[in-house]
Image (tube, rainbow, N blue to C red; front, side, top):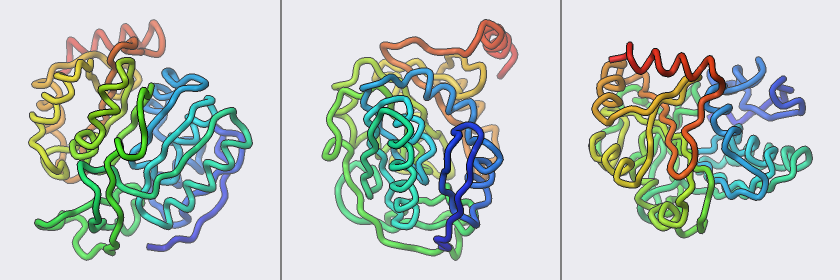
Length: 278
């Protein structure tokens, strides 16, 4: 991959932030002002000073930086060396402007320790996917491959944590299996998680992943400006109706803390959507 970078000053941060120069998605959005606005809002609504936060699939560090600015101790996991370097520098910038601390783990979260191959998307540098045997995803045919380290979250971070973000491009179930001790130690927990079945999800059927999360006691909805609690069947129906190659949906989960909605207006919107959506 092209590891060249550039410095931007996104309005949402108010200080310099480093992005990959040829990225087609995340970098340009941050340069325009911000990234993943709804998810960022939900993240910041829960994170408090002194809280421990874990960011799996941190990429260049947008969410990890938000946690540091909020005063949290953030454990960011990013296995691609060139991207991890950028994340490290962005964490140090955030520490100069916020009261928290960023700790970078240069590994991919999985259910076991070891090594694996990751495919590097040519332009969307947020869409790098771990493969361990089996066929490569057809939309990444010919992608650059590098070897990376895998680790269980439980080997790197001990709970309790207050927020867990998982953006691992299909490895979410495996990451959760390697974080069972952390989950058990974190009764008050909010999460953001990518859910991309059946195309990219590894290690489980989509029903198994959702069943695991509901058994853990989470309330689950979509990470939108107006989230509402959803059943597993409803999540699956809406997700599987999407183009499988372009991606699934981002989920918002809470356990032991309020299922947060931004405003009275959005609470009304959430109620209306809960009635109208399939």
